[in-house]
Image (cartoon, rainbow, N blue to C red; front, side):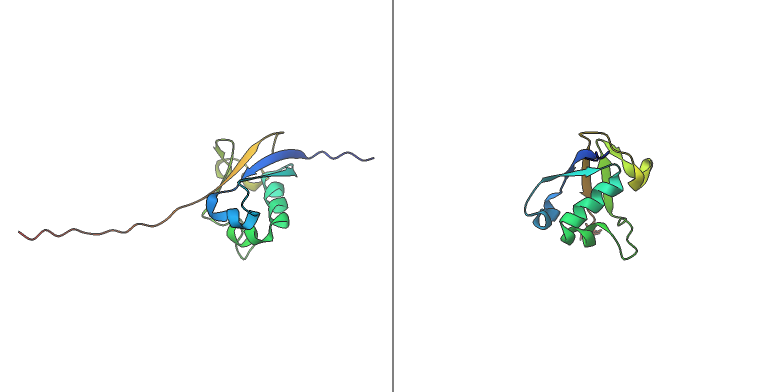
Length: 106
């Protein structure tokens, strides 16, 4: 029987995306790289794909991916290699707020 050289890792799902994973906050996948893990995740939960990938099939700019405490953008990006029991966190950027100039009538 052939053996696989993939690693089991945990992907942490942020609250806004949990509706696409049947409410699960974590999902275990077998993968060698971050890209493999996210592709496996979106194969299992297709509703996540539009949230993670743009029309060119690249990770969306506002999606931050961490392996442990390391932001993969400052390393090997989606090709970041994974070790057994690594934890991947999907962290969507939060934008918003408004600039409001207060005016005081004297």
